[in-house]
Length: 381
Image 1: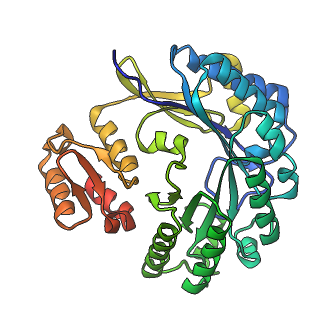
Image 2 (image 1 turned 90 degrees about the horizontal axis):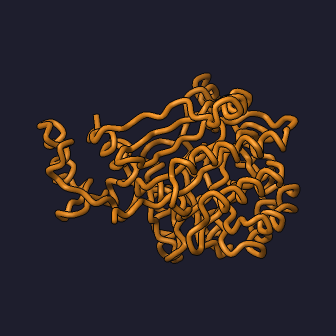
């Protein structure tokens, strides 16, 4: 019997209380929410995909966004109940919700747990008040620390994000801040370099000269320090930006990076599914009102359902899998590399020590992960 890849569900909640200046996600300012309509639409979307994935169970359910912790509790409960009814969960499933460290959201932690959530992802971003103000966050450092402590009392598994390589941040300041984060006893951290995405408020600020991004060399120093400190604390990197104690890696995100199957529901959500030996890429309608209307009229908000050919699949597998320390199962004679240019570039990356190939797996070296975007750009173009 053919073994099916793991299956996860991603729910995109599109609303935030405010739009952060670095964010380029599909998000909108919070407004009056029709909870019954959203619950019904997301449930119907899940019913549509359950009909195409019969007999499978879920490894994970992830509420992202946006700020899904601000969604009506009835929506969170409705989605969780629908997943249990339509698929059922594997043993010890991972059910995550993203939350901000505001007092209002902290009061809801226990209600999330009662609704089935067993992992909380906190958008801390920084433990410094001046940095949080710069990043456009609506919490301060004290509420961030309090949220971490509260979450750790309610949930067995808690992760939080930090953004580094901020303008005027020194390496010593990053050492102290990361040290404080590790001292919380967190068993999972996501550490992201500040990137300037086109079209964001930060992009416009840089264009008009309000401030300048940190240099590539300094970014590399910040990254290297993070690798050293997290490894010393028992939270070695398992992916370019993610660090965890043994056994506490994000099971849902591993589905992405290992190129398994996931369903995307909610406005602007992406999905990848293996159906009838085809690899399907899906993307839903972005605008919330248009998404709701599409689901109500057709049963799904998916505006595209494309079949990926072998080359497209390998490109995606490499782009996702090389982010992982474990790399990917790989055959060097894959048809993708029958092209002489691609084959020579792959060999060059191996000879330069950016990639490591042992005959069965391909992975990025420490230096390769440090410059992974450039490596992938060179290898896959």
